[in-house]
Amino acid sequence: MSFVFWIIAAITLGGALTAVVLKNTVHCALALTAAFLGLALLFLGLDAQFAGFAEILVYVGAVAILVVFAILLTRGSETPKGSVYSRYSVVGLIAAAAVFAVLGWAVLQSAHSFPNEQAVPSATAQQIGIALVGRYVLPLEILALLLTIATIGAVIVALHEKEETNG
Amino acid sequence: MTPLTAHLLVAALLFAIGLAGALTRRNAILVLIGIELMLNAANLNFIAFWRYSPHPEALTGMMFAIFSIAVAAAEAAVGLGLVIAIHRHLHSTDLDHMNRMKG
Image (cartoon, rainbow over the protein chains, first blue to last red):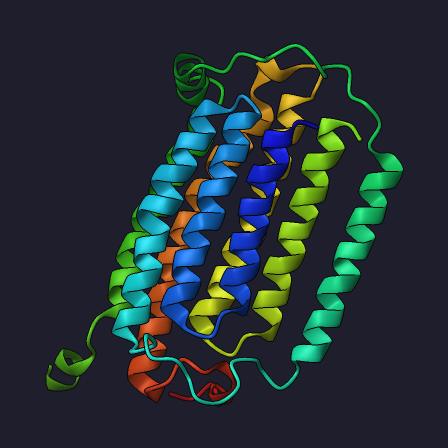
């Protein structure tokens, strides 16, 4: 594998690890942005331009900002004094390590070379657009509905409840 | 090591990091961050399998990843809305304090 891939993978994994380990929640959100950016670069390295830029738009642009907003709205920006880990964190760590061991073992055991190792597949925005309104038009419509419902639901859930007690 | 194996290993490690974050942190927002990391590890798998599949022109893995990104965005919006609502109720985002279902 190329040197560039390992640098991007190190950025991604380092960002993810920092996001999970740091104490201050705002720092976690910033490290998360680095991890998403590394993932987008990995997608670009896999010749998936559309998915890479969608990742930057959705995750770096929207989800990271949303996380920062949630942190500031819940006054989570100050560093907590006690432990930031839950009571059962050792069990969680063991479970995560076991999952990684199983996944890594399975990957190393089974992944032989695929036939398409060299040829670069073409997936232009035009091809993806045609596929989205052709073969995948039903999932696209369902997704539009889901996004509308999720937006309305998130606003309703986060709304103030004081008006309800009056009426 | 083939490129596919390397990508799958990176995705597996990312998934494990996200799982560890979701299982060990107290702050509900950090748990959501861990879930986002796990979803992204799955996306990386989709894209890697699409890139090295014998028929990439079918765009199957690519489409799955794009739809998964959109669903994850909806999930993040609802999840963070829930965290804000719970914080208004309990004045805390500590998951160890959320131990009753009655409001």
